[in-house]
Length: 530
Image (cartoon, rainbow, N blue to C red; front, side, top):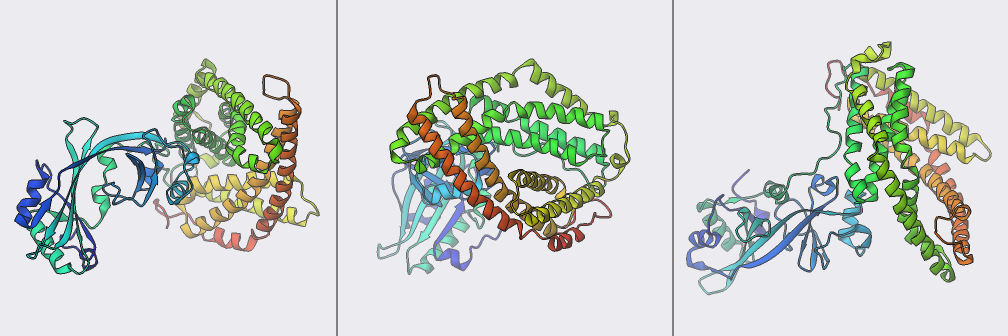
């Protein structure tokens, strides 16, 4: 890092890292600038930081913080109102919920980096700000100063974890700012070019665990060992969400729990020939039982997440009955969550998980098959090619049909999802341009097909509510009319979604897929191919 800031930085603001262990920041600045500086009295502010259960903001290099009356979204570096990328009025300090925040730059940015809805407090600090200015011989202010000292926790005896100084020039006084910068450097301060070097949140709290707690398989690793290690990592990552599900932190936690288990089962199915069929079936059966117990809870979560949008399409005269339907569904959802949490804590679930962990920890106990001894890169490459050919073939059959059945679209959606699982797990072995094209194409097609399937599932669920209403009392006419109206609206949206999905399907052509597959080769000596 160069000590001298560039010319553009001198014309605006420079961030300085104060020496470690400075006992009195004001004295440091005064010693550097002598009597030319005037400092104001210190001001104190409480700050509370939030992140998702998975630490999505930390991974994106962002910090979400509450200060009295405001919610700040800060880029890497010291977090304050001055440095925030987006600010939202917020009473706080209760943890924010994304869907309840007003629409704006802050919420749009959060939605881009996380699918979680709930944010949890991860750290707290006190910020001391000493503002001041540097004046010239005529008494005119030429440079603004701002000393920010962050103390861990809320206690007055807390030790500082970060001290920075911001110097900002007023227009037309660049030479004066350059002189101030020279005197600050002479006092031992360092100009910071990358604010991430003085990121605040990592100094206050450890990063939440993310992703799979495992080392990815090497391309030349035997497929049996590599596959079982990947599945074991997915099971471990899924189990990390169990406390969040029990505490009902966020519906996204259940969704990610299910995705990991589904992904593990799909990989085992796609890698048939690596394990003996009976052994493979036992693993998939145990994983499937844990996942299936949450099916009903997930369907209710999806309905409640979309309930606000559904309420907008219900006629005004039926909105009050529809609100009653939502309340009844929420009560049923809470009961279903209790049933699933009891299952997670049951001896049955504990036995299933222990049996899975024991099997996955000993690959040598599985029957040796030819594909299991081959390198995982070669086997994965063949499976990816096979899955791509399957998608292209199904796509051509659907496009040739006069009126494709929803069941055909659903099977194609599953094929796209399985291709994505293969690419996400083993794509690092191959040329990234080809992997990116295949993954992007499969994701876009899956999303279009998924909308058709989701609307069908929600429509079927509404009709099931009519037949087996979850409320405690009888289903009155208003509730029935609201559900019937919404089911009809979903049917119209489903027809529109089918048309869009078929248009997207026409773009998934075999020639470009074949070109991407031809570029996928296993490296000769391990590592990854970029």
